[in-house]
Image (cartoon, rainbow, N blue to C red; front, side):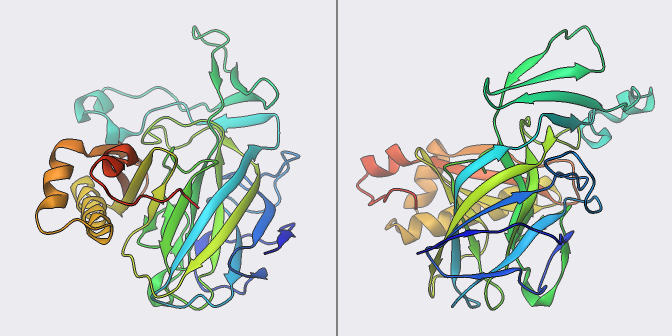
Length: 311
Protein backbone atom coordinates (compact mmCIF):
# COMPACT_ATOMS: atom_id res chain seq x y z
CA UNK A 1 0.00 0.00 0.00
CA UNK A 2 1.37 3.37 -1.02
CA UNK A 3 0.27 6.99 -1.02
CA UNK A 4 0.74 8.86 -4.30
CA UNK A 5 0.79 12.66 -4.54
CA UNK A 6 -0.39 13.56 -8.00
CA UNK A 7 -0.58 17.05 -9.54
CA UNK A 8 -2.80 17.04 -12.65
CA UNK A 9 -1.77 18.88 -15.79
CA UNK A 10 -4.36 17.50 -18.20
CA UNK A 11 -8.11 17.05 -17.79
CA UNK A 12 -10.78 15.19 -19.73
CA UNK A 13 -14.44 16.05 -20.17
CA UNK A 14 -15.44 12.47 -20.95
CA UNK A 15 -14.90 9.19 -19.11
CA UNK A 16 -13.25 6.77 -21.52
CA UNK A 17 -10.14 4.80 -22.39
CA UNK A 18 -7.62 7.64 -22.30
CA UNK A 19 -3.93 7.22 -21.53
CA UNK A 20 -3.60 6.80 -17.75
CA UNK A 21 -2.02 9.62 -15.76
CA UNK A 22 -0.85 7.26 -13.00
CA UNK A 23 -0.66 3.51 -12.37
CA UNK A 24 -1.59 2.42 -8.84
CA UNK A 25 -2.12 -0.81 -6.94
CA UNK A 26 -5.18 -2.04 -5.08
CA UNK A 27 -4.94 -0.61 -1.55
CA UNK A 28 -3.12 2.53 -2.66
CA UNK A 29 -4.18 6.06 -1.77
CA UNK A 30 -3.98 9.05 -4.11
CA UNK A 31 -3.80 12.66 -2.91
CA UNK A 32 -4.64 15.07 -5.72
CA UNK A 33 -6.73 18.07 -6.76
CA UNK A 34 -9.71 18.76 -8.98
CA UNK A 35 -10.81 21.86 -10.84
CA UNK A 36 -14.39 23.13 -10.77
CA UNK A 37 -17.04 22.50 -13.43
CA UNK A 38 -15.79 25.41 -15.53
CA UNK A 39 -12.09 24.44 -15.33
CA UNK A 40 -10.94 26.85 -12.59
CA UNK A 41 -8.28 25.72 -10.13
CA UNK A 42 -7.41 26.47 -6.50
CA UNK A 43 -6.22 29.96 -7.50
CA UNK A 44 -9.56 30.54 -9.28
CA UNK A 45 -7.72 30.59 -12.59
CA UNK A 46 -9.04 28.89 -15.74
CA UNK A 47 -6.59 26.07 -16.51
CA UNK A 48 -8.78 23.99 -18.83
CA UNK A 49 -12.14 24.13 -20.59
CA UNK A 50 -15.50 23.68 -18.92
CA UNK A 51 -17.85 20.72 -18.89
CA UNK A 52 -16.92 19.01 -15.60
CA UNK A 53 -13.22 18.41 -16.41
CA UNK A 54 -11.95 15.26 -14.74
CA UNK A 55 -8.70 14.47 -12.95
CA UNK A 56 -7.37 11.12 -14.16
CA UNK A 57 -7.69 8.48 -15.37
CA UNK A 58 -5.94 6.36 -12.76
CA UNK A 59 -5.02 2.83 -13.84
CA UNK A 60 -5.54 0.18 -11.15
CA UNK A 61 -3.16 -2.71 -11.68
CA UNK A 62 -4.93 -6.03 -12.17
CA UNK A 63 -8.38 -4.59 -12.78
CA UNK A 64 -10.25 -6.34 -15.58
CA UNK A 65 -13.79 -6.50 -16.95
CA UNK A 66 -16.00 -8.41 -14.52
CA UNK A 67 -14.28 -7.00 -11.43
CA UNK A 68 -15.54 -4.31 -9.05
CA UNK A 69 -13.58 -1.21 -8.05
CA UNK A 70 -14.16 0.18 -4.56
CA UNK A 71 -13.24 3.84 -4.00
CA UNK A 72 -13.13 5.29 -0.48
CA UNK A 73 -13.13 9.07 -0.06
CA UNK A 74 -10.57 9.72 2.68
CA UNK A 75 -10.62 13.50 2.27
CA UNK A 76 -12.81 15.90 0.25
CA UNK A 77 -12.06 19.56 1.02
CA UNK A 78 -12.67 22.81 -0.93
CA UNK A 79 -9.34 24.51 -1.63
CA UNK A 80 -10.32 28.08 -2.48
CA UNK A 81 -12.45 30.89 -1.07
CA UNK A 82 -14.92 31.50 -3.90
CA UNK A 83 -17.62 29.16 -5.19
CA UNK A 84 -20.24 29.83 -7.84
CA UNK A 85 -23.79 28.73 -8.57
CA UNK A 86 -26.55 29.30 -11.07
CA UNK A 87 -29.59 31.12 -9.69
CA UNK A 88 -32.69 29.79 -11.47
CA UNK A 89 -34.42 26.45 -11.11
CA UNK A 90 -34.23 24.36 -14.29
CA UNK A 91 -37.34 24.53 -16.51
CA UNK A 92 -37.75 20.73 -16.48
CA UNK A 93 -38.22 20.84 -12.69
CA UNK A 94 -41.06 23.40 -12.90
CA UNK A 95 -44.61 23.31 -14.23
CA UNK A 96 -44.80 24.38 -17.90
CA UNK A 97 -47.28 27.18 -17.17
CA UNK A 98 -44.83 28.71 -14.69
CA UNK A 99 -41.97 28.50 -17.19
CA UNK A 100 -44.15 30.00 -19.95
CA UNK A 101 -44.86 33.03 -17.77
CA UNK A 102 -41.13 33.82 -17.78
CA UNK A 103 -38.30 32.84 -15.47
CA UNK A 104 -35.98 35.25 -13.65
CA UNK A 105 -32.64 36.07 -15.23
CA UNK A 106 -29.96 33.52 -14.39
CA UNK A 107 -27.36 36.03 -13.24
CA UNK A 108 -25.13 33.62 -11.29
CA UNK A 109 -24.09 33.91 -7.67
CA UNK A 110 -20.84 33.89 -5.73
CA UNK A 111 -20.30 32.36 -2.30
CA UNK A 112 -17.50 32.84 0.22
CA UNK A 113 -16.12 29.48 1.32
CA UNK A 114 -14.59 29.34 4.79
CA UNK A 115 -13.13 25.92 5.61
CA UNK A 116 -12.12 27.09 9.10
CA UNK A 117 -15.68 28.07 10.03
CA UNK A 118 -17.00 25.33 7.69
CA UNK A 119 -19.48 27.69 6.02
CA UNK A 120 -20.59 28.97 2.62
CA UNK A 121 -21.96 32.54 2.64
CA UNK A 122 -23.78 34.22 -0.25
CA UNK A 123 -21.89 37.40 -1.18
CA UNK A 124 -23.44 38.30 -4.54
CA UNK A 125 -25.95 39.18 -5.74
CA UNK A 126 -27.34 41.12 -2.81
CA UNK A 127 -30.82 39.80 -2.06
CA UNK A 128 -33.43 39.73 0.68
CA UNK A 129 -31.85 36.47 1.76
CA UNK A 130 -29.30 38.69 3.50
CA UNK A 131 -26.05 37.10 4.65
CA UNK A 132 -27.36 33.67 3.74
CA UNK A 133 -24.97 31.16 5.32
CA UNK A 134 -24.91 27.37 5.04
CA UNK A 135 -22.70 24.68 6.55
CA UNK A 136 -20.35 23.08 4.05
CA UNK A 137 -21.28 19.63 2.76
CA UNK A 138 -18.51 18.87 0.23
CA UNK A 139 -19.36 16.17 -2.32
CA UNK A 140 -17.97 14.88 -5.60
CA UNK A 141 -20.44 15.50 -8.40
CA UNK A 142 -18.88 13.52 -11.24
CA UNK A 143 -16.66 10.46 -10.98
CA UNK A 144 -16.45 6.89 -12.18
CA UNK A 145 -14.60 4.47 -14.42
CA UNK A 146 -14.15 4.20 -18.17
CA UNK A 147 -17.44 3.33 -19.81
CA UNK A 148 -18.17 -0.05 -21.34
CA UNK A 149 -17.63 -0.89 -24.99
CA UNK A 150 -14.77 1.54 -25.47
CA UNK A 151 -17.13 4.51 -25.27
CA UNK A 152 -16.06 7.97 -24.14
CA UNK A 153 -19.14 9.33 -22.35
CA UNK A 154 -19.46 13.03 -21.57
CA UNK A 155 -18.81 14.12 -18.00
CA UNK A 156 -22.11 16.01 -18.00
CA UNK A 157 -24.11 12.76 -18.00
CA UNK A 158 -24.04 9.34 -16.33
CA UNK A 159 -24.64 5.63 -16.92
CA UNK A 160 -23.55 2.25 -15.51
CA UNK A 161 -19.95 3.48 -15.18
CA UNK A 162 -20.90 6.38 -12.91
CA UNK A 163 -20.34 9.89 -14.23
CA UNK A 164 -22.24 13.03 -13.37
CA UNK A 165 -24.56 11.71 -10.66
CA UNK A 166 -24.51 14.75 -8.34
CA UNK A 167 -25.57 12.82 -5.25
CA UNK A 168 -24.98 14.45 -1.87
CA UNK A 169 -23.96 11.12 -0.36
CA UNK A 170 -20.77 10.96 -2.44
CA UNK A 171 -18.80 12.69 0.29
CA UNK A 172 -15.89 12.17 2.64
CA UNK A 173 -16.25 8.85 4.43
CA UNK A 174 -18.29 7.15 1.70
CA UNK A 175 -17.20 4.07 -0.23
CA UNK A 176 -18.45 3.77 -3.80
CA UNK A 177 -18.32 0.62 -5.94
CA UNK A 178 -18.14 0.61 -9.74
CA UNK A 179 -18.36 -2.21 -12.28
CA UNK A 180 -15.09 -2.51 -14.21
CA UNK A 181 -15.46 -2.46 -18.00
CA UNK A 182 -11.87 -2.15 -19.23
CA UNK A 183 -8.34 -3.13 -18.26
CA UNK A 184 -7.13 -1.00 -15.36
CA UNK A 185 -10.68 0.30 -14.66
CA UNK A 186 -9.47 3.88 -15.42
CA UNK A 187 -10.88 5.94 -12.56
CA UNK A 188 -11.75 9.66 -13.00
CA UNK A 189 -13.09 12.31 -10.62
CA UNK A 190 -14.03 16.00 -10.64
CA UNK A 191 -16.91 18.48 -10.36
CA UNK A 192 -16.63 19.36 -6.68
CA UNK A 193 -19.54 20.98 -4.84
CA UNK A 194 -19.11 22.76 -1.51
CA UNK A 195 -22.89 22.51 -0.97
CA UNK A 196 -25.74 21.21 -3.11
CA UNK A 197 -29.44 20.62 -2.61
CA UNK A 198 -31.02 17.36 -3.72
CA UNK A 199 -31.41 17.06 -7.48
CA UNK A 200 -29.00 19.87 -8.40
CA UNK A 201 -32.16 21.63 -9.56
CA UNK A 202 -30.48 24.90 -10.62
CA UNK A 203 -27.95 22.93 -12.65
CA UNK A 204 -25.08 23.52 -10.21
CA UNK A 205 -24.06 23.04 -6.64
CA UNK A 206 -21.71 25.61 -5.17
CA UNK A 207 -19.03 24.81 -7.74
CA UNK A 208 -15.53 24.69 -6.30
CA UNK A 209 -12.10 23.09 -6.73
CA UNK A 210 -11.05 20.39 -4.26
CA UNK A 211 -8.16 18.78 -2.47
CA UNK A 212 -9.04 15.09 -2.43
CA UNK A 213 -7.63 11.84 -1.17
CA UNK A 214 -9.10 8.51 -2.18
CA UNK A 215 -8.16 4.88 -1.63
CA UNK A 216 -8.92 2.14 -4.14
CA UNK A 217 -9.56 -1.55 -3.51
CA UNK A 218 -10.04 -4.08 -6.26
CA UNK A 219 -12.59 -6.86 -5.79
CA UNK A 220 -11.73 -9.59 -8.28
CA UNK A 221 -14.41 -11.56 -10.12
CA UNK A 222 -17.19 -9.56 -8.48
CA UNK A 223 -19.66 -8.35 -11.09
CA UNK A 224 -22.14 -5.59 -10.31
CA UNK A 225 -24.37 -3.79 -12.79
CA UNK A 226 -24.70 -0.24 -11.40
CA UNK A 227 -22.75 1.88 -8.93
CA UNK A 228 -23.17 0.99 -5.28
CA UNK A 229 -22.11 2.79 -2.14
CA UNK A 230 -22.09 2.69 1.61
CA UNK A 231 -21.40 4.87 4.59
CA UNK A 232 -21.62 4.33 8.33
CA UNK A 233 -25.42 4.12 8.30
CA UNK A 234 -26.60 2.94 4.86
CA UNK A 235 -25.94 0.78 1.87
CA UNK A 236 -27.18 2.39 -1.35
CA UNK A 237 -27.35 1.88 -5.10
CA UNK A 238 -27.47 4.37 -7.97
CA UNK A 239 -29.51 4.21 -11.16
CA UNK A 240 -28.72 6.66 -13.97
CA UNK A 241 -31.22 7.13 -16.79
CA UNK A 242 -33.98 9.28 -18.20
CA UNK A 243 -36.95 9.14 -17.62
CA UNK A 244 -36.79 9.17 -13.85
CA UNK A 245 -38.77 5.96 -13.44
CA UNK A 246 -36.08 4.07 -15.35
CA UNK A 247 -33.44 5.40 -12.94
CA UNK A 248 -35.62 4.14 -10.07
CA UNK A 249 -35.83 0.72 -11.74
CA UNK A 250 -32.05 0.44 -12.16
CA UNK A 251 -31.34 1.50 -8.56
CA UNK A 252 -33.99 -0.75 -7.05
CA UNK A 253 -32.97 -3.80 -9.09
CA UNK A 254 -29.33 -3.32 -8.10
CA UNK A 255 -30.39 -3.19 -4.44
CA UNK A 256 -32.35 -6.45 -4.83
CA UNK A 257 -29.20 -8.05 -6.29
CA UNK A 258 -27.14 -6.76 -3.35
CA UNK A 259 -29.59 -8.05 -0.72
CA UNK A 260 -29.56 -11.47 -2.35
CA UNK A 261 -25.75 -11.46 -2.27
CA UNK A 262 -25.98 -10.64 1.45
CA UNK A 263 -28.07 -13.75 2.06
CA UNK A 264 -31.74 -12.99 1.45
CA UNK A 265 -33.73 -15.28 -0.82
CA UNK A 266 -36.80 -15.28 -3.11
CA UNK A 267 -39.29 -12.64 -1.96
CA UNK A 268 -37.36 -11.64 1.19
CA UNK A 269 -35.60 -8.62 -0.41
CA UNK A 270 -38.95 -7.49 -1.79
CA UNK A 271 -40.70 -7.72 1.60
CA UNK A 272 -37.88 -5.79 3.25
CA UNK A 273 -37.69 -3.07 0.59
CA UNK A 274 -41.45 -2.64 0.52
CA UNK A 275 -41.42 -1.25 4.04
CA UNK A 276 -37.85 -0.11 4.65
CA UNK A 277 -36.51 1.36 1.40
CA UNK A 278 -35.53 5.02 1.21
CA UNK A 279 -34.94 6.98 -2.00
CA UNK A 280 -32.82 10.07 -2.59
CA UNK A 281 -32.79 12.21 -5.72
CA UNK A 282 -29.33 12.62 -7.17
CA UNK A 283 -29.50 14.62 -10.40
CA UNK A 284 -32.64 15.75 -12.23
CA UNK A 285 -30.97 18.40 -14.40
CA UNK A 286 -28.57 16.62 -16.75
CA UNK A 287 -29.23 14.27 -19.72
CA UNK A 288 -29.45 11.24 -17.41
CA UNK A 289 -31.16 11.52 -14.05
CA UNK A 290 -29.87 9.77 -10.91
CA UNK A 291 -31.93 8.03 -8.24
CA UNK A 292 -30.51 6.48 -5.09
CA UNK A 293 -32.06 3.45 -3.39
CA UNK A 294 -30.87 2.92 0.18
CA UNK A 295 -31.41 0.72 3.22
CA UNK A 296 -30.28 1.29 6.80
CA UNK A 297 -27.50 -1.01 7.91
CA UNK A 298 -29.11 -1.30 11.34
CA UNK A 299 -32.14 -3.01 9.78
CA UNK A 300 -29.95 -5.49 7.95
CA UNK A 301 -27.99 -6.27 11.11
CA UNK A 302 -31.23 -6.76 13.06
CA UNK A 303 -32.27 -9.56 10.69
CA UNK A 304 -28.91 -11.24 11.03
CA UNK A 305 -27.10 -10.20 7.86
CA UNK A 306 -23.33 -9.86 8.11
CA UNK A 307 -22.80 -6.19 7.29
CA UNK A 308 -19.12 -5.41 7.38
CA UNK A 309 -17.80 -1.88 7.95
CA UNK A 310 -17.29 0.23 4.83
CA UNK A 311 -13.82 0.04 3.31
